[in-house]
Length: 474
RNA sequence: GGAGGGAUGGCCGAGUGGCUUAAGGCGGUGGUCUUGAAAACCAUUGAGGCGCUCUGCGUCUCCGGGGGUUCGAAUCCCUCUCCCUCCGCCA
Image 1 (spheres, rainbow, N blue to C red):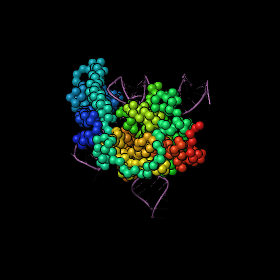
Image 2 (image 1 turned 30 degrees about the vertical axis):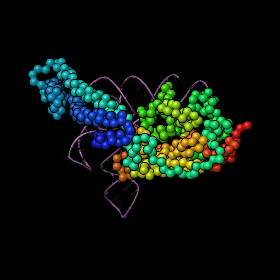
Image 3 (image 1 turned 90 degrees about the vertical axis):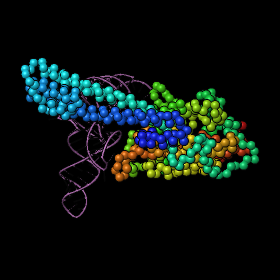
């Protein structure tokens, strides 16, 4: 969620940013937000003045009705004077009439006090109805306002390069050297089945397209990768978290997957639970509605979880192999920081992801996202890509984002500054360290040998029971 | 799955329709006293919105969430969530 004050104060600047993000639909919402916000504040001022009057009169009403010493003439006189004052919007006069009821003149009919009180209640009901009508109107406006705001993406960081689409992303120098093959390297979708460690057909038999089965040393290699990555990040200072893999709808809004990416997730209607498309959702929301002390920050979390994605948007893309599947595992890194440190924390997050690539001794490169490819929640983002020689492409194995206070606003996560000031929103950062399935691809393709066997990267051997080479099944 | 009991500020806990502006205690903060500390005493105390003459002042909202009744709701009604006790079923 972006700060509505920003839209209120600098609507044109916000629109410029949205144009850089290529989000023209969001641009159109800005004028509506400005108008709704103005209307909301007008109504708020009116209803609050009304409520202040009502509160004071009701308080005095309690005393008036409870006063046993009043004569019938005073009840009639007080009620009549109060009615006149309420109808004229003269609150002070009404209060005075109830506090010091003037006796009515002339003979008092025995029914007159009850009738006068009824009339007074009727006058108050009319006043209450005005409050109710305004409250209802304000509620409707706030609902419309929220609906618009939920669709406004985060503002790009000033250092994010401006560019229309992914073709303009800034590619940093390759780290490591691309291996020279003296044979034609195979793609993993040929290597895996030949080794007997990937079974695409039976995965599809069970669950349909984009599902797969890993078998034997393939399954073990996958498990080794995930466990090893988790251990590396824990050693780097991240606290290991095992979260629920299914969450309420609130959580999906809190981390800004919803409303825009509703299509992405699997949903169980009976329980109302959504399967995690990424552990980021759980990690963001575990601190929803909390206020940290500044001394608690930064917090570093890491979670190794499955991720479930419907991939509806990319139907027909990357249909071969394991690159884009409905179920995969990811080691997710997450940070809660103060605004002052989040830029530096993003860089160390990227380094934590790159450390995995380096330790695997697979060539990788850092890609700096331009505004047009930032996504919805990120203010600044780096992807890490690993080289896959068999597939002949760079695979995105990590995406590290600083969302600044965007998710924190949605999930209402704040901290109390050390100087004791009002609570401020934290900054949140997320990054894969790494997604496990694509490094799995990269290991197979980079470490393959002419005879079809695959060497196990040295760092993984302790996790593979000492196995050094995955041999083809005979 | 069945029956019952609960949810009040950072924590404990009173509060069954109006002098409640949520009592009281604990904790926190500031002060008095003290060489210093403790104790005692005094004061103070959360979040959000809006407005203004903006280091402040005013006002509204918030008693698990949402909705309702009422002139007026922490209090009454409906509904959801979560927690506890007992029973059943299962590991």
